[in-house]
Length: 346
Image (cartoon, rainbow, N blue to C red; front, top):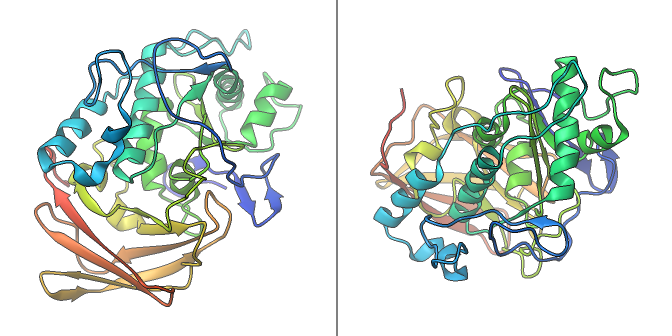
């Protein structure tokens, strides 16, 4: 499945039937917290976060920093601007030699930091990456690059085919961009109107640890089979844009010249409530703003989800938008406060 304007691809899990993916994407309980520059005993690569907002001085982010609801507008903007380090890592591999190589640690850290920035804004715990999944994702990225196409089910006739890379392809978000730039593209998710699957996997309760592999032009983000810590006591729903203070840049990332969040749609996803057919209302300044809403297919990172797009209006910094979903019990209502953290829609 490809995006219409920019070719990303998303693995699919529809109820218990697997489409493309090699294993179920159901969330499972586990630990996805903590970070440092050393590898954990279980093979988890814990990325250095020293110097980032919330750093306690030992390279770890204190759990309370995840409480985005208590952060001020200045703190949100500070972290948004600090964590958006968009430099891609240099790839050491070779298509000619079918060598997956690796991406330098700085590039992988930037991709993970950006992924966790989005999860932090959504009120979800940070995830780590694992050395094993990184290697699998790296083999996947090489195969996509060598064949100049995307597939979750590559055949053994592919150039640079490996079983490791093929299996990872069935468990990953895959992209024709390198790893860091792909995170923004997954969160906008242009062209996946029926699923918004890339975004929903990144915001999944069961995500983590992930695998991050990249060449100079292709990348894979291993997302299936997570043991994410948000599974226990999962939130009733996760919205994007989320409740609370949100930078305008999340709607209009500077890396996304071909699409934005208003064009593709806002979403609400849930593993606990069927929100797919909810009636969505958006208000601002006492006025009801028209939206078009669409149920999303089940199983793409969440049990249910709904997408809704602004109809004749555009998100603006300095404004507050109240979103209400009726047709679910109890109804869902939350407010999005849009911040100008630098940058503006073109």
